[in-house]
Length: 283
View 1: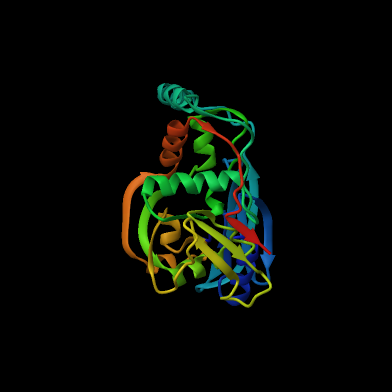
View 2: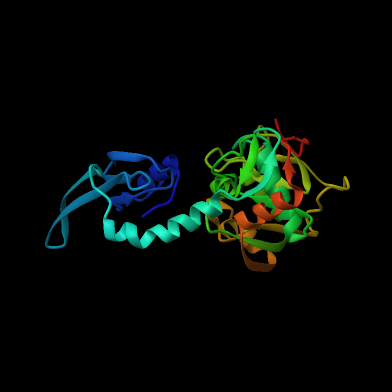
């Protein structure tokens, strides 16, 4: 089982031809299935729209044949007994999801390639909660835009739907630069960032693409100095290939869900406006 971008799945299949079957799911796209040389890749999509079936025939522990297919889930009536059990919980969830927590003066969108107002807002919320100099968040963890108008609790859930938690730690300037540069990988995406103003140059060699990184007071990151950072447990564990963050010190996970941090931030500020301040510049 893998949780990778499409291109990364192909690289794994090419590098490890002994892997004959890969079950994927990161991009939520259903596949037919497809063959990557001798590796069969299957994906059922998202939200229970399909069930996947894979048949493997063995003889004397040797794989002779593989066959896979998608089975669409259609015309299956809800189980009344299950619905009866779920009804009180569904009502409570709907009530929570429609709780108004603030207002957006315009659409707040996010981007994987440039600075974006929603990514800035999320990172600002994390830095404020963590009380650190810097905040970083993987852009792949943001899954929806915030639209103009009233912001409901459910909207914050859609933005940050995963059960990831807030983590504080300390990183050197060198570790921060290496982490920031990882976000230039197209399949990863630019990190949501707070507390720094960073300029990238994609034309520079690997390891030199962060050409400027300034704190809010205008001082440049010192490669050997330690800085306090707020991030999340996913990338501390090496998610999306951010392996450098896990090498930090004084790592503290308080078990606070990221969406709760965003909700508290919106409640505290009440009105959220989309704006860019030039904290990320990519050349």
